[in-house]
Length: 303
Image (cartoon, one colour):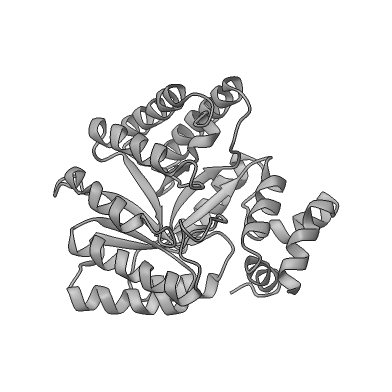
């Protein structure tokens, strides 16, 4: 209840105060901030995936501006030899305004990533976007087999069927690259599982299926139960460490992050930055009030 109350109040609190909560899980407002934090994470043994904050643009001019910023981002991080890749939200590039324009924008980014020998991961948004984003991924994966990945959400009832529908794109030389997370958007019960353990169970079911079918999986969770279950599945199936990675949000459960690295597993940190941090912060906390507790702990626990 306290988490929910704080999350609801945040949009009405001065930005300076909200920043006290936000700065622990947002790397900063500018590209230099994201670079500096990404270097630190690389030195700790973590990979990164960088996200320029912003989504649901109102016109294609905004989408073009974001595209140009992302091109600069990809080139600069590559030139400075940051060990990581890039995450994008299609709604930032006009998905709900003009699907073809969105595809052209994303294709340009993936083409730049191809030239820089890196990868662009298509973030999953709410259920209005799911089918369109999977179609975008399919189109881009066909043209750039090793340069594009996709995020899927375990709480969506359709997810396992979606994975199965993509298996025709899964090749030994260019396996599907999928980040599996629990899911954060508020969805109706007919579309999404709601029970805490129910979501966990489907997460592991999806993970097992992906690993069995040679899909490269980003196991994106801070849930110790799921991490331990993932260890069990990986050991049971005899999956080698080059076939998966763990993924976590910047600033959340850093001690758990370090323990995964210490066990010899690959781990990637999701590093968001940008001047749109306020909307991102308040929206994410309203969608997932449990994050409030993680953030409050992160303010005081540094390791």
